[in-house]
Image (cartoon, rainbow over all chains, first blue to last red; front, side, top):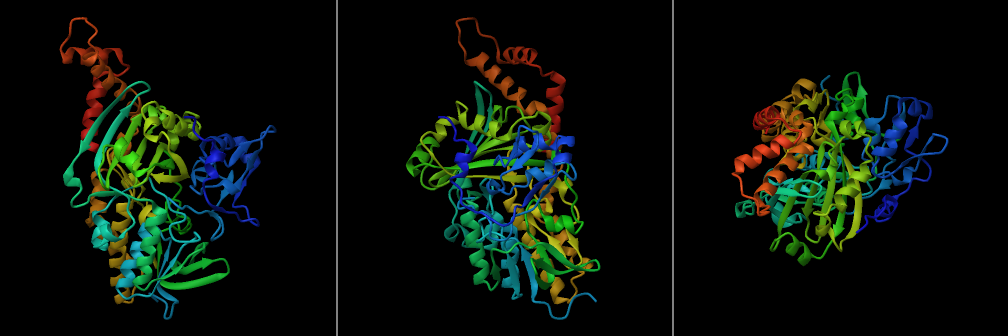
Length: 95
Length: 433
């Protein structure tokens, strides 16, 4: 049995998207210089981070499962990450 | 001044997880005015765990826990598994004594924490969901309340129960950024299966449950492990991998997870199941070393936010420690409120109570476990060695048999392991676990 892709998995979750505010911000220069960019792509279980052909890191904040792994592995200054505003983001029904 | 004259509440608790709910419940039962703030749309909606709760502690807080709380199964079967690519060696420990009194249960936190917050409300606490606390309000060195957006709420004591990322404790200077060898990421799927199928596959009856702890090929050699827990009509299946090792080996965490789900000895358990939910969680694995300062003027830190998690290799604990820390904190806060002094010195007995309880005692007992579990050999070579010894014993290939000791010696000689490593790890393991 082939496992579902990460985007397929995420469709099973309930999310309340904050249309107005993104809770994640990558400093592209520092992310590139420190190698944080590639780590973000590899370590995020929700595949929030993608490396674009030009080497920048794009962010799909709507998919965030709010674990904080990205912040833990990021070099100083490479990432601003906070929880989404109250009531927004993933809402687990199982947990 | 030791505390403000007229705050909005005596106590504000940040975060409706297990630690926050138990603290709020205990304080409300003391007759304190308590506000419990939760950033999820409802309590439980941001909370996730592997799924096994060692339940004796919470049973003391809620005597009817077993009857009332939405728990899944009583764990009576612990299956400890060295998993290799083509072989598997396990200890299958089943014991009726674990069923009564109940020792451990599987839980799904969105359900359990919703129940806990209801208990808080019944006890008189006010619940405020859908609100993210941005920071602790301070005056000088003292925490005097919380700020959420433009709103300020004041209290004699703030309880930071905001989980492993604890922005509140970090911003207050109580916690530093942890080194990566003390952190792990857990990735988990909840997969639905009919109740009868689960009972057949795991050899269970009634509400008995099984907990599989897996080490080895499930994480492709990265420090960590896999787990598979039975709920009533679903399975919680996942991996936990140490961040220093994951980043050093340049592995993709979801590839490791997929590899585990597809492993030839794991996939049959999941066959035919449907994904209900996918989640992840950061895990503090530093043990005792991670518990830093947990008390300051007007604030205490409890549960995951205080770094209270324990991985002993066999048992993985966090939720029971959250309960114990909340009970200790609520007692100390109650005493401090009675004396109308909620300074750091007045709240300090929280730490003493914590370390006198099973929480602090166990953190000390297993202080060496995190270091031991960093031994790389645990995640590949030992499992293979065990399987090779057994293969040499069971594989009756019409060649003359050799005594077990000789088979073991030859397997060891062929493995990259050295006898002195085996002895050293054996002694270190015996001391650490």
